[in-house]
Amino acid sequence: MTGEITDGPAATEALGARIAAGLEPGQVVLVSGDLGAGKTTLIRGACRALGVTEVVSSPTFTIGRRYSGRVAVSHLDLYRLDDFGAEDPGLLDDYLTADAVIFVEWPQRVAGELLGDDAIEVVLRVTLSHAGGDRREVLLTPAA
Ligand code: ADP
Ligand code: MG
Image (cartoon, rainbow, N blue to C red; front, side, top):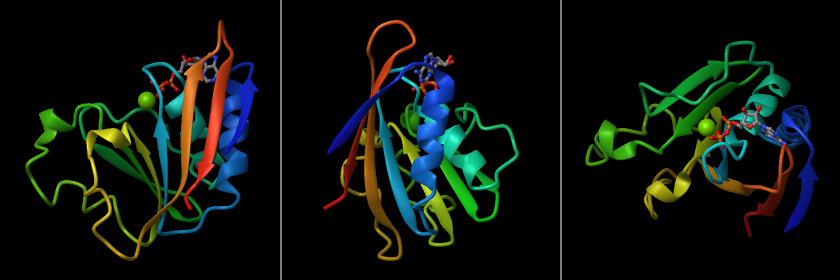
């Protein structure tokens, strides 16, 4: 595990960009942390580095969004999973695809069954937490 403190949104976006540099389609990054901790900010930085020019904000009226950069990017936010029909087994299928780099906010909302598909794998867990003011602690745990 490695950790660092960012001192504002730009620094968290920059960290996201550094993370993105090592990512390939089919790889999943799980991004945890309280509301406002900076999950979407980090993913925005990663998306920019992957060539995404669309607005990157937390998906509000859907469980996820897909962007097209130099690669396809899926961005899931499972915070309101129950509202969107967690019982539907195919709910996440459009996002968890091997052709996309995949970021998941609130991954703990789905216990084990997030990755049924062998073609995609979790490669990194990112945990953000408030560290006073605009400071955020960001912990990076590569998947074993
Ligand atoms: P989350 O997706 O975790 O709910 P967001 O990324 O949407 O969080 O929001 C984080 C908020 O905190 C933004 O308004 C952002 O500008 C602000 N902020 C302040 N300092 C930081 C920081 N160091 N890293 C990330 N966001 C920060
Ligand atoms: Mg968010």
